Image: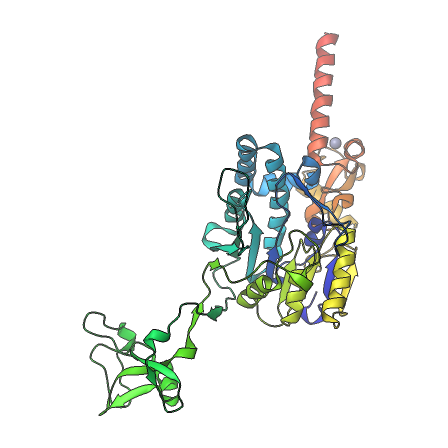
Length: 464
Ligand SMILES: [Zn+2]
């Protein structure tokens, strides 16, 4: 879909199906706060906005899309072995959870723009395993940060014999080396007033700070330049453009054609946000919808400002109570929210129209989108002929040679399981193989064929 025709969309379906239907290179930023593998059943308190919408936080193979398993095993064999190993080290539930997540993260990586970023919010239950998943899918060089968010200011007493946990982990990955990043600043908490002892003609406090290098700490070689007829012996501490800007503001302290120091004002004290976030408090009051894992707007605002620009597209594939969508809309970004929970969607629609009033420019739909960046091939003879050549005239199941008219076109990943109408998903099967497979997977077909073959072999032996 062309970006100018983009409509904010809330999808209410399995996020794997939705992701699979979105074009490659579409989204600028993905934030996800997937349900954790905690083996607990969360539900919202009765009477809260989210009452009735509980969501599962425990995992079994039913949560895994079987039809996509083969694709994962074929494209990420190392990752598949890793997940199986975690199954032995940790539990089958963790193995199922990681498989579920891997299937989705692969698609998220695909729909991200080359300049895009992904933030995955989790806790120590699975964070170390998820990091390995992300390293393999995004490439370890595209890991940027592990952000620690301190959730609670208050002390939470716990009966267990260990430290209380008050932090979450947020992994920050980018698709490539060229990505959008706007550093964020907060007011410095350190009290600097002691060092600002001077007062200017307007009563504003300042101190003087060295603007040149000195004997023990010379400037970088780029900064040995002449300005206003003066070149400091050990270079300037800033680039020429910055120096000119400071001079315009009257900050440079000139004395007899020499400038060593500049005026630094107290109110300019901000510091760059680091990977430790302690200034954002857990959601309270009016903002709360009753979702136990709801994240504060300020948290999402920081992420969206840092890793997208106005007009960019923000996606939350586990959007829950839609905090990411609300924050994106407030900051002039476009958004895609996905959630499978019908009740969650009701709250979400209510919230989007409640909190902001103007939030009516979005579509809520169950329909799975269709990719427009790959050619959707009609089921015509030419496709069949091409497949026939590719398979050397053999059935892709039993491997027996057939005439072209005896082979049938099959969806490798069945349409019922989200498989698309494009060439990579077509194959030719003989009538018998196609009947056995039905809307199941290739793995099932191969298993069945192997069983039939071994039965046939046994028959021959008995017959001799
Ligand atoms: Zn066959």
